[in-house]
Length: 128
Image (cartoon, rainbow, N blue to C red; front, side, top):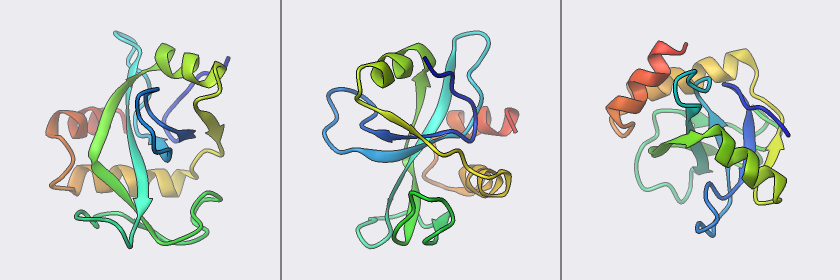
């Protein structure tokens, strides 16, 4: 069973009830208090309806195969044990972690984005 930490990525739906898989990026380490961390997904730049605070270009990460953005408006807290169960059952698949530089870029975007929920931005800020 994997453990997750900031900078890790995974592919899949965040919950079993979600049908569209995305690349998700973990933006904070799991809290020692509740085992939850902040994650945001990557979406296609062309179909994006809003926030372009953090644009990812092809090749910045092996999973970025077209111009993309971080979808801060859909950022969520995720329970580490729930994500581990999803991984064990094959709903999500861990992918290559971000480089330190790319993680800093995505975290900085979380702090600047008007679409990032403020309480989640604060968790990212504290965990940097």
